[in-house]
Length: 112
Image (cartoon, rainbow, N blue to C red; front, side):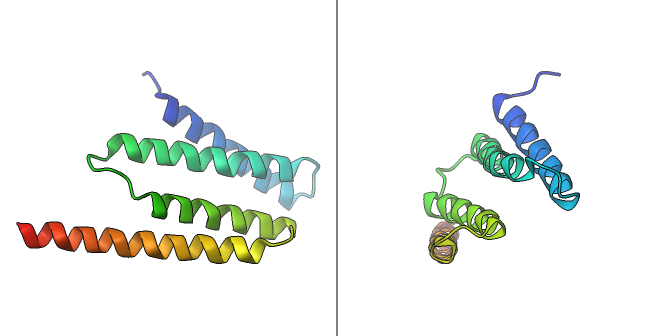
C-alpha cells in the first residue's frame, strides 16, 4: 500500500501531537515542541487530504479560520501574548467561511 504525501504528513502530525500530549501530561521536556510541530502538520495534512477528495474549490475563509483557532488554542496552553485576538479572528473567519459555504449550498440547491 502506497501512502500519499498528504496522508504521510497527517500521520506524522497526529503522532507528534499525541506524543506531545503524553509528554505534557507527564511533565517531560520537549512536550511543547512536539505540540507546536505536530498540530500544524496534522492540520496541513488533513487539509491536503480533504482538498484532494473535494470536487469543488475550497472555502479559504473556513480553512484559515479553523487554522487560526486551532493555533490559538495551542498558544493559549502556552500562555503566549495576544492569543485572544488570534482566537477571535480565527472564529470570525471561520464563521464567515461557514456562512459563505451555506449560502453557496443554498444557491446550488435552488438551481436544481
